[in-house]
Amino acid sequence: MAEIGIDIAKAKQLLESNELVAIPTETVYGLAANALSEDAIVKVYTTKNRPKFDPLIAHVDSLEKVEALTKNVPEKAKVLASQFWPGPLTILLDKKPNVPDLLTSGLGRVAVRIPNHPLTLELLSQLDFPLAAPSANPFGYVSPTTAKHVDDQLGEKINYILDGGKCNVGLESTIVGFEGEDAIVYRLGGTKVEAIEQAIGAVNVNVNMSSNPAAPGMLKSHYSPGRKMIIGDISANLSKLDKTTTGVISFRDSFDVPKTNLSVLSESGDLEEAARNIFSSLRLMDQKHIEVVLAEYVPKEGLGRAINDRLRRAAAED
Ligand code: TXA
Ligand code: MG
Image (tube, rainbow, N blue to C red):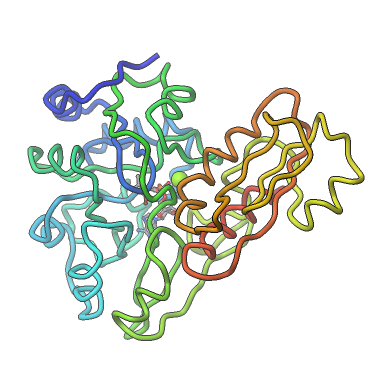
């Protein structure tokens, strides 16, 4: 098991020695390493069991530090940065040569984000390099939203987890890039598409659902609780199954299954609360006695679109 605490000096010292540290953000916990050190980045890929074609996000605490990594920044990107950072938005920008190819999987753009968590912002302000940080879960599994989630799965492999409490957004950042003048959303996440459109006008949403994606990392099957998942009318599906071995993830309503098998995302129908709970709910279904998980889509608006995206990928089989 890893040590869990709030010792920023310890986190800093480990990161400066090219070691990994799990860090809290407002979205999910990240598995952090020095983003300018190939030795450190390799450890991230190995520890997560992540293919090297799937690039990492660089986290910094200021626009000056973004500028040190990027060039040709479009006007719309500047608007997004000023409006949404620090926050759950990642922007793809042309990289400068100092950014290691290993970080971007050889792509010409680097993903950057200023996260909104006080502990991590303080840590970043004390470091003279950015932090590469993918979600702190084994590749393909559900993202962690508490220090304990990280410890449960990566605790044997890392020394230290900086504990920032439960993540208050609960979904990964929205990823935006540009093709010419057009803004494209490549991953739905914690910043609503509606809010982005209010800031810069219409955007294209291009979230790949493929087993062999053109945009790396957006694999069809991801966030898997390791159980067969069926999305649809929960009552109808439940009537055909053994309730003792069936898990249920519902939006608002309760269902007639054992209490340990049920997770209601938000009784009041609040999509932000549902977003905070979705990954814990998926984890809860990873219990030995559960064979099948029934879930339902939430309303297709605001964070609901990102929640539905995660449910769809969690249920995908390849
Ligand atoms: O909220 C978040 O973004 C969290 C926290 C820790 O910041 N991080 C996160 O990282 O979700 P990760 O590695 O689990 O997901 C990053 C996604 C991947 O799908 C990856 O393919 C994509 O971002 N990505 C990273 N760099 C990219 C690049 N240069 N071009 C295209 N996609 C990129
Ligand atoms: Mg991830």
